[in-house]
Length: 504
Image: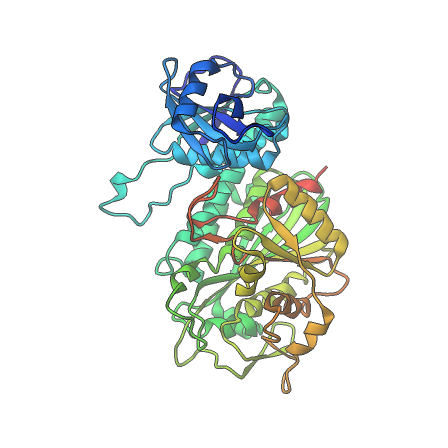
């Protein structure tokens, strides 16, 4: 894991990262007058560097990284900030730092001198540098030695370095980086190695490493036999076609030495591999279905991060885990299953399985007394990607105040979410002629229909958010900013910040 340090003194690293922006209103013709070097609180001689940037065709656009050799240091790295501004927003700084740290793989250390006019800006740069310094090489053999190691040490140069708030921001950024990368590791782990059982063991190990009971954390796991005996028909129905039996994982966090100001339940979809079951998916793209447990990984890792930040917010995290496979025991189209809590569901499409495991866990989560809210996170529908693309997640709710508060939280984290409706007229499409409801309904607006299905399992008076992260959870395109190819770890930062937002 990359270590973050603070400094306001002499730069000792051989590599310096600074920002590069383009000035608004200037001629489109490339030249030094169109560019602006942003080195924060570090004074550098820009004259020679500017000419080199012009010669290299630098633009200052977002995600651009330009490396220039220098006489004072071995390398000056310019990372694009986009349009020049008196103050850059935190997400711009976060992404610029992430792009630079990705480009510096293979270097042991670097000093980042970007504009830090506030503690929140310093924290954003620290997060970006940490999140960008990621590599997953667990399953490489002969090519492992060819992989460039991520930055080991990042020093943030800022006049704010001596402030206690800056040191706390660095600590927070390191925790966010560590547990976002845990989510990424779990997502990137192939289904041959990540089953419902091994997922539980990985999280139990992470909880133990974080301090376990001493940190206020407790882990319990329900086996398939226990799930069957207690009537968790959704989890059992999805997982019964696989040789790897389902599980229900619970992480409980109770603040130590302080009364909890709020109590939330987090529920994350944990399909460790989704073949579609007897509604078999096409071969093209099925390999990405190892990411179908992204929601479960996010809620579990977020809970551990909240504990390590010692936030006075109680969390009950639930991860319903199953592998949706084909066999002679798999759930058939038209089967009727009885969910935890007693509702019956006609399974018209075994590939609409995430909502089934989530529904069981949502009902179980509500048995916790005095909840202030419940949030579920899921790679739930392909319709989410159609509606919002691969970088923006959806938010659905039964409580506009809770949703508005969460949307304000995402402005702090930089994670892109967009509120979506739950139209009452679509609910009728989930009616079944033989059961309480069916697991699919109207095809148009499929993301919203899935949200309405889940809403049936949440008490009207309990504030609830449904986060569909289907597209943003797994990046199959090019890396960008602090986002690598593969698992992204989306939603973790916003879940943690939700807890931070109610802690003061």
